[in-house]
Image 1: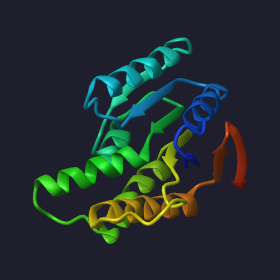
Image 2: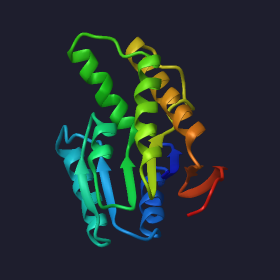
Image 3: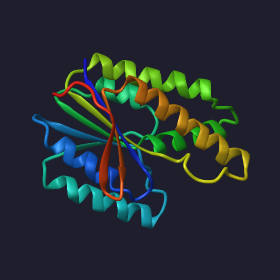
Image 4: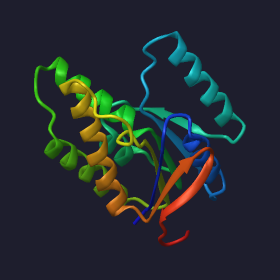
Length: 183
């Protein structure tokens, strides 16, 4: 069974860098599973910057914006998996549902997240998930934004419950919320 670590925090809190350094401190081959879609030039530049940071430490990178469970199930030969990030994954899932003119509920989020975690439970090594804590601000003024906030909150709760460790990063500093087995 894989060791699961959830790293959360606000925007620009340092969570991705903390996750990368945590992963790089672990032995074995590493793979970065990117959920971000380059939707504009600014996002493309962010992606390139992150890719260059990983080059120094011999990361393999796989892009998967939607089917995380299937992708993690199919990846072989790695000891460390870094999925960055769940909030973009949820945004992608919600966008796809909207394009299909179908709903994506909290129940769907729970089921999809549990499927992902079941795959991780069957794996070996360490899986690190990065996510944003989006529920600390004001209540969004529209339905779609509130749904997104609720889906992220629900996903984070499901992952945190099953994770071995949960770390919140604020101002670049980690705060251990849940400590579990160490590899």
